Image (cartoon, rainbow, N blue to C red; front, side):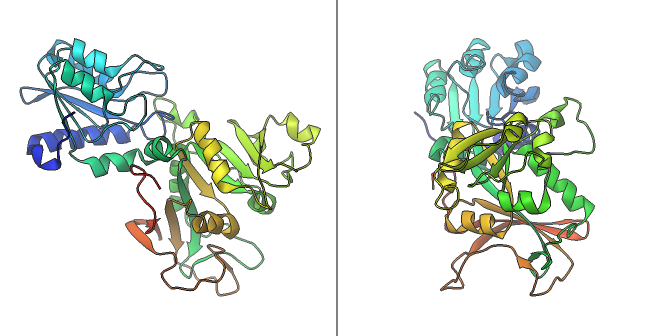
Amino acid sequence: MTMTTKSDASADDRAHLARALELAERGLGKTQPNPTVGCVIVNAGTVVGEGFTAPVGGPHAERVALAAAGAHARGATVYVTLEPCSHYGRTPPCTNALIEAGIARVVCPMLDPNPLVAGDGVAKLEAAGIDVLVGPLRAAAEAINRGYLARMTRQRPWVRVKIAASLDGRTALENGVSRWITGPIARRDVHVWRARSSAVMTGIGTVLADDPSLDARLDARLEDGSDDRQPLRVILDSKLRTPATAKTLSLRGEALIFTGLAAAEPSAALVATGVGIERVAAEPHCDLAAVLARLAELECNDVWVEAGPKLSGALLVAGLADELVIYLAPKLLGDRALGMFSLGALASLDAHGLTIDEVLRLGDDLRITARPSNLASPATGA
């Protein structure tokens, strides 16, 4: 198999692939459990077709772009943000469609780590006489599909821990009051992230204290109705204390409680809500690695965590928090207010170093996106 590097790509290659990545971003949150993929078809320097992956069960990006290109696809170059699939799943293989259309060349940033593909797509294209270039803009392509890559390479989702805090790092007053620390623009941004996620997870402490909804509420309905899709709402509740009246259990979409093996049987009222209940080891808290492994089995790519300092800290200490999304408000709450993470006593100032990826202003607030420095990328495992 031909593996090439960024230097093998021309400026035009990178420009068309960058456009394909823009298209892929349009599918964020709509294609799960599939990756979101963009595709651009170019013939004799002219773009003849574009597309991105439809919601699950619909056509993949390559087939959307091929339909737009029609006969102009013959002899063209296809720029696609992930190796074309080569197996029958919910849809037929994209490699077959590319070969049948008479494509001459394919450029993609990376191979698909799905064991059902994993280089087989490129091999079939090359066997059909199609020139394949793999490698340009790989880092950008990985960033779009971090959750899918994490699930395929390490069998657990990409975990983002969301924190809303004052400028002095406090998440609630001493009496527990926390609404609202951040402004409306930052709060709407949270709903965008929820909508992009496979699951929103919290702990029983947050459920009992705040009774959160945990659903995605966007102001405007998109043309394709994609904001109708709700993430799975997950509660970690080792002793099964979730009340049947919890707000999140009454909303559209699915909810799931993870509880301890020895927890009491659920009440009839809780069962009547339709919530799923699964048991994991809990000594005394739910085994976080087991929870995430199970969510991967349920085809969750991205998990968005909105919880108190105990669960957020536990994920960080266990090395299971892949990314932090921290909203900082221009307020000071003082040293008696609650902090972001329960981490215990630390022996070093560098115990939990972070790599900051982005700082963005949202109204009066800041959104800081950072990753723990000691974690591997999802493409290589962790």
